[in-house]
Image (cartoon, rainbow, N blue to C red; front, side, top):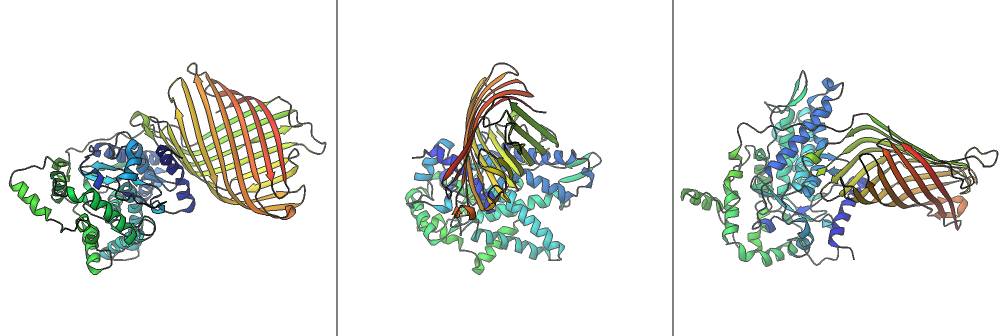
Length: 637
């Protein structure tokens, strides 16, 4: 049985499927659980995070020699990329992992919450719609919201913005363009981001979408745009503040969702069981009263138009799915209660606190420091190693590795936060193994296995506090060139059109003298073809997946001296057609190695490696393998 903590980690590696299929990641939250838990306000941390990412995007643009040719919309797109890359919502992952964000429930209690306390708990054997789990709740300016609202704000808000630009450019009046945006958001809630997946239609998501659109529009199109081109580069004229956008409409206890009949039957039963008796408690009453007097955004078009569509019967009747309906009661007029409380001189101190509303904007606005990026925009790296051990019918073996990074951005957020999000917008590698000499006279390469992997938009998330590591990349045109004599292959070429690589790992003891690490990598999926000239037939099919497990340990003996041991094993499976082997076949590649390392300097490494590569062909009922021993040095430039 997989432990609950392991289940949460598996959800991280499952994100590769989101990227591979291009589908959206649909998640839900349960704010009812947080009403009497009151997470600490994370406004400051989230404001700082967003402003650092905006300033980081401007810094990357200004470092380019052609920064002056960028339009404001070009720069806005770079801002958007700081929050999302390769289908991953970076800021959502950050908020779920950062120790600066107080979440309810906590990570250690999350599994128990999902199983025993969430309004979405059910007796289903597997709830496909909630495969990504139920998100925790945090507090922003007194408003309870889930991390999913961040992805709606920055991702779907950007889609709203792009549609708005296209519509207005085509001459569509502004009112009609805004209506089309809200209808588009409703379509996503009725399909991939809602009823068709999680069985939930979230009105809170619609508000987060619209507020994200207002943010992106403020970058370039407002009378006082946030982005300004100066003689020294692009600048942020005023910082981002969540209080300009957040409101109780983000909280699904106030702006409740609608559900499919099956999901509503489950949610209604849980609401009745857990909350009906608590509706009249001081905590619940003050929670709703505080929201009733919360200052709203000046632009409330989304709220007004959504209510209009509900009244027309085009959207679900929201009140049919409220906690009051579930408990057989009418919703109280909290606005009247709030007015009476204010007239009586009460400040609402029992609730989240009016000081968290938009009325408390600081003057002057706080200043944020732009992050300084590690590495350069153009960073080639090379590792080359060789050995003098005779094996596999050869005199010499060579191990080649090259890493070629065209655009790397690494924000050293460990100085500000334990969670780091480095990204590689274009990353490539050439690695492989050559065995030289002592072959048949007509062959110059008795053994060769070279792999070229271009990776576009690779993303990583590293948590220094816990050691967790997550990496996902979109792989385009990975290729493999083989010339095997030991494996009974004179020549072979394999190529996949596209694929996805995901790695989930943990590193213990980072920044300590001794450390242990482990990772699980998944590489899939793409079209694959192999031509074997030795027997004149071709294999065509699909590279289904390659799974690799790596573990190791390291010991730092000085500022430069490091000892390391790495163990790695992997297996790949293909499905396709082999005319020479009798039709359908599922060949598999197997590999394993053990490597001892000594780093003398930061640029050089001595190593000894024992390696085994094998190919299994079930159609021909044979397994071909070659062992190799390598020893030598690797250099990084």
